[in-house]
Length: 159
Image 1 (cartoon, rainbow, N blue to C red):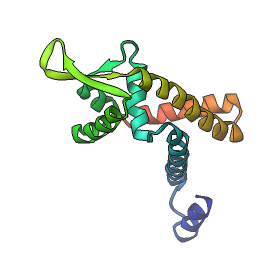
Image 2: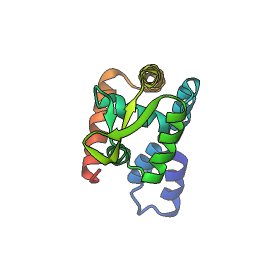
Image 3: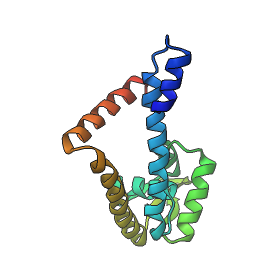
């Protein structure tokens, strides 16, 4: 990013490229960490997207059950994208889809015992990768400051 913004400074010295530097670094960091997270989850037989489904169910608390609509809304996925993930996770025995006892037209997605075991192990592996990357560059106070600044930026953009 330094080289890119330096080039812009030469050809367009009137531009303030700080936003480009910030968002360019966020984008590159996201791409780099996405690859690392995929590798962290691979030993558990899941992708990052599949981890997100299992983690959402886990975070919901016992009985680790949500509707497909709730999962889609939380993960910002289309119903088609969610169905593909649920199909794979159900075939792997990590969750089940059952009729909603309160609405015969609806389903409930429930984390299986095996799914609970997998997500609990995978979240630890993923956090280890994230900690390693974070602590390699920042101390605890800087990491907290960065988290706060990113929260403010996200809130300001309407996220």
